[in-house]
Image (tube, rainbow, N blue to C red; front, top):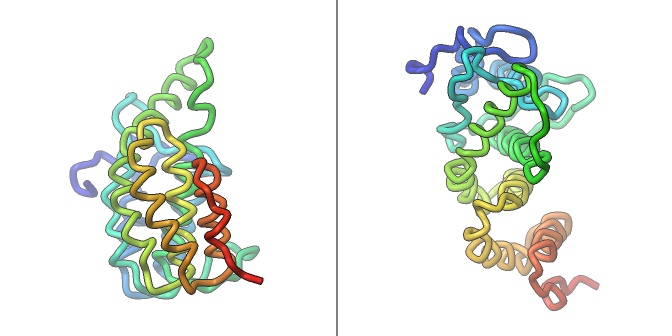
Amino acid sequence: MLHSTDWASLAHAYGPAATTADDLCGLLEEDSEVQAASLGRLEMSVLHQGSLLLRDRARGPVHCRDSPASAYAGRSRELFPWDDRRRLLRAALLEWLGEFAESAAWEEQAPAGPQDADDADALEAVRACRAVRPQIFDAITPFLDDQDETVREAALGAVTHLLAADDLADRIPAAADRLEHMARGGGEHRERVGALLTLASWGRDTAMLLTDD
């Protein structure tokens, strides 16, 4: 994907996306500072203030998948001064993918109104991102069982946003079984409550799942 994409033909929040491939490669570096800086730039440029902004000026496809999150094992110090968390980089990446899924679903059911050329380009980019949600879901699901609780929590958030899409509704039963196991497990209270809230949003009976005093 990195080598086959004409990144110079793409645009993000700050203009041409020619260096985006460098930031994607930076996620695979061993230096955690390089990893964090690369992810920070991707967060600011591709998903800018909640808007998906990587799009082809020629209205071509947008590539938003094939990220080998299992490779990201280094600790990451966030690039932003207002976020001082230290966590596994894969947790930060999963959180970012969850935000991507949430943004891609924005106004998905709203009827399309009159559009100018820029609006049409932006909508096409969002539709391209929506089209790869099944692949992203398949890549994220294994992290619900990660040994690190911050990774599991980030994966849960991403799965919740992804399964809000109608085209992924058939994945809910299997995901619900995993979340019920998570809710009954020995994880942190916050993690189990997150699983319960998601299950409740799917119409599952959660009355007997949380037994904390």
